[in-house]
Image (cartoon, rainbow, N blue to C red; front, side):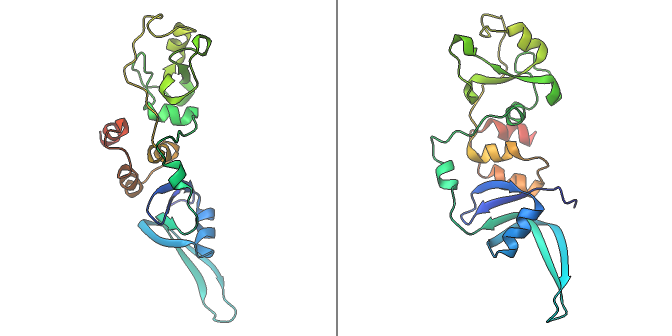
Length: 196
């Protein structure tokens, strides 16, 4: 496994918290903050040789690590928590589809569209944002979809915290994905997209 693979960090109750790189994971292991591990072995790291024992240090890093310590997950999982919007998370939420023409695009060919334009009182929030290709976004301009004679192909939604962790992940391994999906709301639109 290459060292760029992210590790999913959870609290001791198993609530997903964040993605960490191997260096942060090693730091958590060395500080004794790992409560338990799940998933496959990502890395087997070898350190120096202990002068007193003559043994070489070894560390196995797993794909999912639960850590001790004060958890901020409870406040993040509160029903009123709204994750911050970023274009990368928005485009992944919408499966890199333009929600107007329905075509798939690379991230560089997509833009953030305010369904109700800011000029008409629309907010920069998940439920008022749709992924749009440049052509559709330019056609829509400062209008609502109805005014521009466009129709959304999906209903925008605010992701839960576990869904947001998924959206922030880069290369998610199968065991990490199964763990995250278990924390998605049952009605999550992402479940259908991920399972297909």
